[in-house]
Length: 411
Ligand code: FEO
Image 1 (cartoon, rainbow, N blue to C red):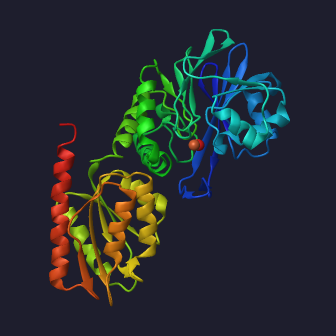
Image 2 (image 1 turned 90 degrees about the vertical axis):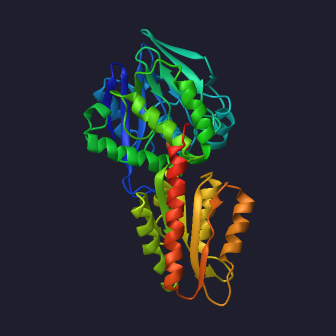
Image 3 (image 1 turned 45 degrees about the vertical axis):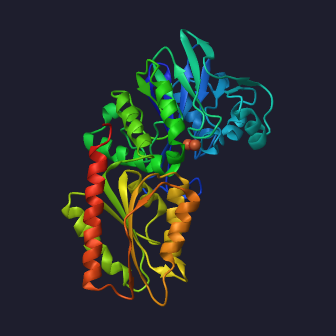
């Protein structure tokens, strides 16, 4: 954990978490930074917590000493969001100071009892409420439900224009010495943009409608700095991450970019024979292709690619009269997270009978992601040259449809 100055009177405590499954589920190959903020007026508040602190409370004492903050002087613990990656440290903070006031939303109150048996000394805040820390430092609160749980609020420091929105505007990716956008190279900014899409697609995607509402609400504030609960702080160009998030939210309904995610699985190499012709055909039409094999590639990687992809190509054999099981799993996850309105083409092998296509049709009818299908190509055993040519032709047709849809965006 380390401490840095965001702006006069606001300090960031940050710790990297690596080699974990985020939410017990999502790989973070490049780690994730957890951020907490100390806000000093005449009184002192700490906004959200940092799980993964080593040696709490000793490490926290050492870090606070660097910025001349006496832990005993922290009056308010502001809990923007109850998910335990941010709130789980409260138990440890009690070891430092047992008598603090929790500032949080009405919907967080029952969760505070459920997780931590805390029922007293809670200040409930909502839209338009403020907390005066003295010395001209007034914090304002805004409800941003479902970004990413229903109880979530954002905290805005009216003195400096610093928005602390917890999960909103966050990204994956561990933080090194440079942790503010004004300290990063364009290549490092690109890295965190990729990590922001990974974070958004894996964690926030299903909540894109409330995220768009939260962005609209935040846009009414005079924001100068965005200091999220994960990832880098945007001090030089906060509108960069705002505009990125507007774009990410728009990907839910599509059309997205001129990109196709090819997801394929193969038992004995028959379905695999269609993969290269499909990719070559798409690339010959100028489409950016992301290729993933199941079950080998992680869900996190596949969702990251599919979020910005207008099209999906599925290479999947029939398995025991149904879909190839790892394909079923990933497609259900895409549909449940509301990757909507993708243009989809499927090919694959069968042996004594088909069944994968029927199973896929039933899944789509059940989960209703609004996917639009081209005619599939199924082959008994290995594909003939004619069938491979048909796969390529379908992918060219898919590419044309995608380019037309992307070009018509916003018209
Ligand atoms: Fe970073 Fe929804 O918690």
